Image: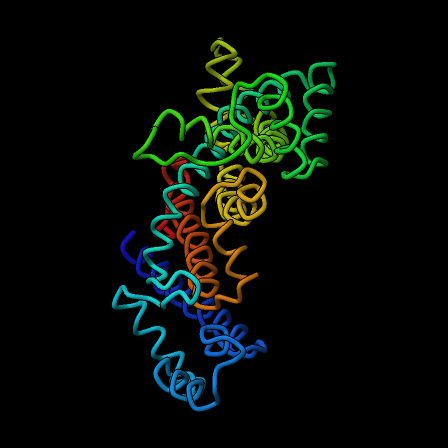
Length: 316
């Protein structure tokens, strides 16, 4: 177990290094001058040159990259051109919206997908199975932003149950904040429900054909015990893998859905930063999202042994 953790941590560090190098390289070669953005188009060449020196923009690539990595390791990060504050502070404030949104969306997906996938597998080739598969196909075909708009029209405009957008803040109104996140979380969660339901069904169908399942039934165990006590646990391995990937995709999906519902989260922050050419914000947020995806998949790898005792993380 210890050797496995060491190997995974080394791999984690290597991936984060490559991601940081890629992100910095792409933004380094993009046209545009951050100093010009800060001072405006009427700034004199002397003023622009002085600001470039102060920001370190006159340094070569590796010097700028090393300075950036050093600021990340110290916990300071870059400085936003638009907001005139540390990017880490911006990320922390916006993560208070995107974090709960992603967790609510995945909770909705898991709560709906596992029972639906098991139900469809137990009723294979029957009308109930066909209905579930048709619903998941519809969920895969509908874009997240379109589903979000439909939910807004239904629950906000016609019924007035939820607000059409905005976020009051956790300090102002906890219940109102939860209600503000529910519709966007539902839009994100239903799309993930379709994916996880289909995967759960196919994995359950494969496991239900195993010899140990037939043996459990031959012993007279109740069908519920066979399905949920024996089969489902072993069928969760591929579901966990996709779950980790979906958690990463939620951060990317939040960029669109947060703009649809006017939520001040990470997605909307990076969207605005791209339009304002606030490169330090774009750089740090993209790196944070990549790091979150890598860490989530690392935790998913560790969960394999807990779900299936046949898996040994030390390779024995």
